[in-house]
Length: 396
Image (cartoon, rainbow, N blue to C red; front, side):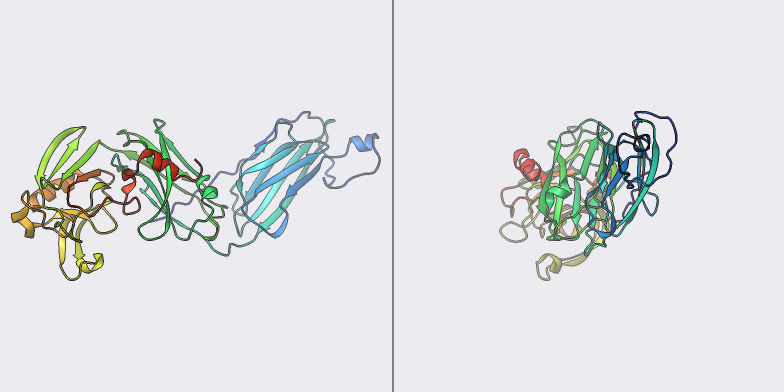
């Protein structure tokens, strides 16, 4: 999946000065004169301290600016490419802290303007460079930007390296919705074995909801997995309310739209009594993959099959699909005789393929199945109760 580069416009954080009178003399802010109470002392500019400073400093900390003997009227913090780390001043105007953390391997310039009580102004520039990251962590996220997805689609982030400081990472993840949808983050192990965090609503999304993810991870230390050196963002929209009801006991599939049945299709599910059984529970359509090669050896079923399959719709990472299965034609609606997938006729598969979209839930039930779809096996998040899902967040 392609990555999205996030840029923040360089904007100075301005503070209203307590007084404005004459321009500063340009005397360095760190220069202190002896004596007190004299006119010279009253004209001295404020003393400014910026941390961190120097070269090879540790990343992952906010930048702090303080002024002694005056107030901060403007603080601008930019990197070598002119991007800004915005910030917030304290109420008394003597301290300022960046809103974002310094990223590894980056040079920063801090420009500070101050004003004293009697109007003496001064500008100070400071610079520092952060040390390079020993290891960089990256993210693969779903869904992609500007997609229209089904009502069960979670926001999902899978990390290249382990995330041992999960709290630090989760704090940087922000979901906003057009209708204040209630939801929660939940950590899990992805089917690939990597760390993963998903955000899902308490209930299926409302159609038309607009969703934005902002993963402001640049400068965040994930722990043993290393640093993040960029941000990630995606925006998507929830499409029509569609639910696919799969009854393996009756060997049929029903597409419901807005709560009403559109069509019922005879199917054949996984063969009972062994490893070829289908999964039950709620699986979410992950992708419409079209015509693909399916090889039983890739899912631990020996040499049972190796064929090109049309209208393939992925439901799990472990290899369960809904697809056209003309070789099982005599079993549709009569018996479950597949190797775990939900098969149907060419004509029904072609129609069904055109109707569904990634993010649509498949609610699967049947007496003889091999278990419930796990959260990390595709998007099995909906098989966890809401209370248990909330408990998967480390910030709850």
